[in-house]
Image (cartoon, rainbow, N blue to C red):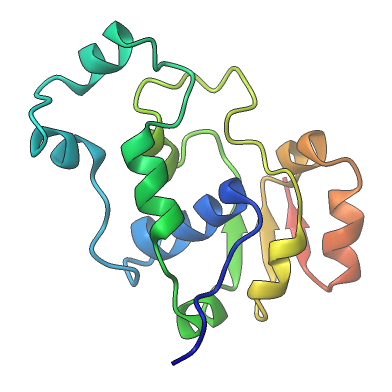
Length: 148
């Protein structure tokens, strides 16, 4: 039995989840926060978030799901492109009324690049550079093409 692969940066992991779960649909089943919350008695997710002051946070249920989610090495090896964009589906599943006006989903480090041996392209590098000055240099040094 191999040890689970551990990401150091939760937000970087979310970028990988976006690619595999919501774009490629190879990491299944896709997590649907609304469905999950309905199963726990919350019919109006947006109202629940607002009434509980959770607009600017990753909901605990989503955080727990994605933190515990194991991604097999073979799926990680299939990732050739990543993108940072404030409109990613995975962000909506974590914070359903998030407006993108804060640093909630900022990537804090690039150590997890080691988990993606075949990454060739990173899109949204302007945003990444804002979060992590010098990120473009790190990506370029690894032979990863960057796109705005």
